[in-house]
Image 1 (tube, helix red, strand yellow):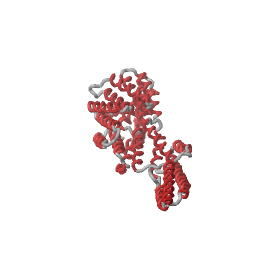
Image 2 (image 1 turned 90 degrees about the horizontal axis):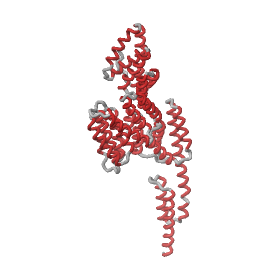
Image 3 (image 1 turned 30 degrees about the vertical axis):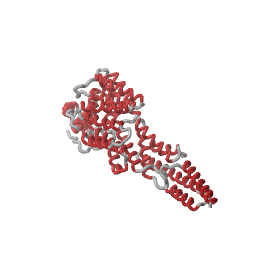
Image 4 (image 1 turned 180 degrees about the vertical axis):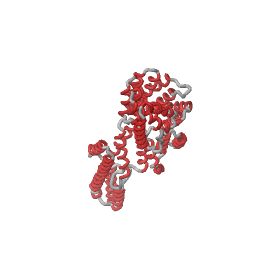
Length: 492
């Protein structure tokens, strides 16, 4: 009996040693079906007392199984890239389609889970410093497809909560591009996944929806979502930055509603939290918005010197963290003040720098408003040809980004330049567009535009005027299709 006990103990100790080796060699947070079956097999062997040598023979089978799984996971990644590349190609985005295929080919030896993790890290870095939004969107779309396509025979690319996290990042990217409708639909389509989310992810989800509604000037809806975000802050570690961001968006909501004193109070509260947590991006955005308030002529305490000070602080931080969009925004805002102070050439140089930084970041809205500003600066300096080019470019981008309230104003700017150039036809075309869109979006300047059109009717024959207005209406119809507003009145 004693000898048998020793043999049993020896077998048991051998089994323990092999188990420890396996655990070190193949650590897995989540056990797959094969590994669970393997552990069950271990228990059976221990119970019946089969020699450890037989147990060790299972190792090659385990290795073979993992090899098959890795191969299938790799095939899933390759097929996902190929399918997404085909979608891009069908949309006429050939360069992006080619880059997607080159990306999957460049790391063909990489383990699938490592590939997924590195891609996710790259997305997070790009969202913080959005120099290439198209590439970031492509990576995110692929990660989302991998998450939805994994199965029993491939690596696991996350659950419903992980999918929601990816969709929140995608919405954040669309917010950066000022595509608020797409950002909103991306989030609302995943609302059902909230039940799988922890409190931190719920805060981020509601915060993004609140941010979208702030940008859309939907005050009540913004407050509802921001309040939901605040209510989910409980039991979250290191929640100060999220709390600061909620305060920041609430402040911006007040700012857009012209409740400037309430906005300043909340911005200062967010500044304290951002300072405490050394959040440079938070400080940057807050300084920028405080500068905007103190520059605003509707604010009774407006102060250009204080506004310029805030913009300067924002610009320094933007350069420190190498954020091109933030740098461009600070340059643009500083240029506005310089222009107001009469330093038009200095303002023009800053506008041009801002334009380059917006271009690098592929920020269409930023490019739109900056082209418009460059056009106005050139016009003030008497460079009318350059003014026309930039003003027209600004209008095209405003239409492309569906910045509705600015379309009429910008068309009016082009009409002014056309008049200075002595181009009667261009003046009638763009003054008509200014009339139509100023009227459509409740800008009283449409009356001035209408009166000018009536004046210029006397400068050409009745037939020419009719032809010009017919052409202007065709331009307006095309714009209406692009901005999705087919009900705009086109009659004089």
